[in-house]
Length: 555
Image (tube, rainbow, N blue to C red):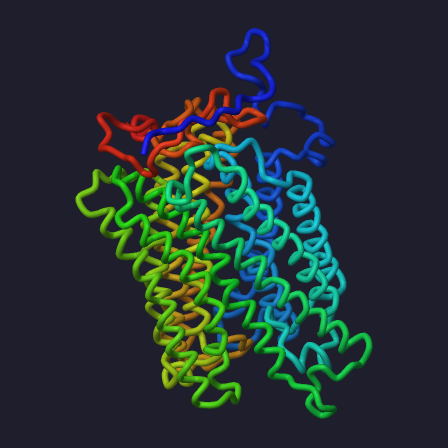
């Protein structure tokens, strides 16, 4: 198929004396120009700043938990404070960092650029989604001020409806409001992908990152309303005393678990599918090879999104559901691992005989590949009913979902941040420091969470404030790893801020990457492209003839 150019030119010409029009970073410096912007790139920056703030709030909460667990006795904080700290960590990290981390930031910034569009389909709805996110987040902050919440991030009934005296309703409403932000973002991405693709950008010319955003958006639009209604039922039971989940009055507490996990297992893929999209872009670029099995990668993304809706019952193997249901959910849980395995195989095949560059984004991609694979393999253990019964509510489960949700997603997030930082800011960061941070993150994460597999298998329950002394060595290792992980998370904050002001100019395409976003200037102007972008086959890579800008920087 021949290359086709986008016919639409930018609306405004270059400013006098300048080769390019003002970019989105410098076109209006006032606070009002940012708070009322409809530019998808600025909205992405607003989301990035917001989720960074909440990332550190969640990190501080879990730091208290990890310091408490250095010793077997509860000698740092009270049991009540301990419960509130791990609950705060879970609520903030799941709903205010992990779920919006890649879609709301890089999805917002890159989706129009990658398909040759000027903006998202609904720019005003896009900025409204950020305001809803902030509103939900502020309700969560109010929860902290009101004394915290101690139910755990899952809000399990009947504790959350009958027994907890903490600010359950405020926290639940914060997550409820934030759900509208996810739905609006998903609708916007779906519409944009359908109607704003450049001529020649067929479905099977889309970058896999765009496919990942599309599959993620389907999950957000279909699953999030179920969570919203579930949390609203908690509010109804507490405020109006309606026995929705109260078994003593005809309610069904297991109904809550079915509804909650019907959303929350697909929500894992809201976090992981975008990370898969990022990994595909990074591996293809730094291996300088066309992605192996592109069409299979597309089908695998869609299959993960679809099958993910049918496996929620594997969270309830010990909740009293029938043995027959357990067998069915176990089988389906193994089935959802198949498309994930296809993706790992295809990434590995892409790397085979590639001309691999070990730039910082690629190191983060390797970290994602390793951590996601460990998390996926241990997920098969939990999909096996007898093993799951043995390790339910132990640190084995904690380690598994952190490898998937945190190790995989955060590694991909930092990989995306480093890869597209020159595009976002027009600046290069210190490559050596970035590589050190990537390696520290990988080793720090494994030191933090791998010991938890061992102590979970040995029977250490999760959420316990006091524990038997024989588990202390594992907790000391985990806390030491968390300290190393903290350094790896903070390092990019400093050198990226430095690079924004003093970093070397990046040029339009320092990685010599493919994709329409690299045909725009860095940073892009308001309407993204100065000249009509040329649509070609995706991932048409060839081995580089010389070093990239980052490699020259290190040399």
